[in-house]
Length: 196
Image 1 (cartoon, one colour):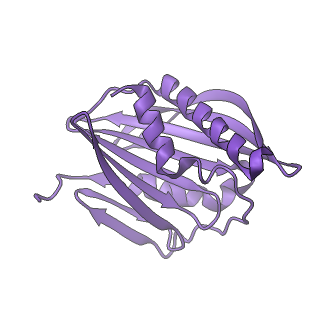
Image 2 (tube, one colour):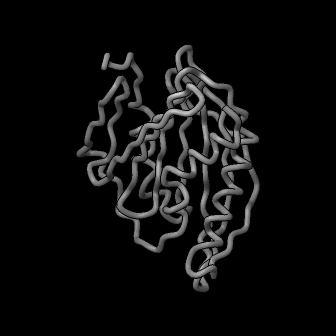
């Protein structure tokens, strides 16, 4: 699967619709977690967040997208590709940011704009190992307000699938949601899918 198709499916899930929002961000309720468990994927997530999912087939690859959304502007997306596919994170973050900027330009009657910042590397524990990721800065401007935000992408190519994890949040809301992101990521487990 090409990086372009992966980026389109990533953004198509819910990434762009949540790029621009002017909501106050409630603190993630990590002390009263909900649990997601379906078809071999499980994780805990904050009690005041919601989960939406969809599955698609393309060129013999099953793409499963799970969106974990806060009540404000935070989005964490888990994507599973079966069988495993190789993904170039540097190219992918570039395509993702381009798609986000295009979507921002369509919002607020075309009066929104965005400016991209630096892309940096990071490492974190993800699915049982320390893995490399990419983080990109973006500032969204609309209605006279500038909203600096960040987008992070980390991936794992496993024996039976590739898993991508995407997060986006305005920088000013990071303190309210960081524990929620950590709760999902640290509790994420993969097992065999149940037979149909």
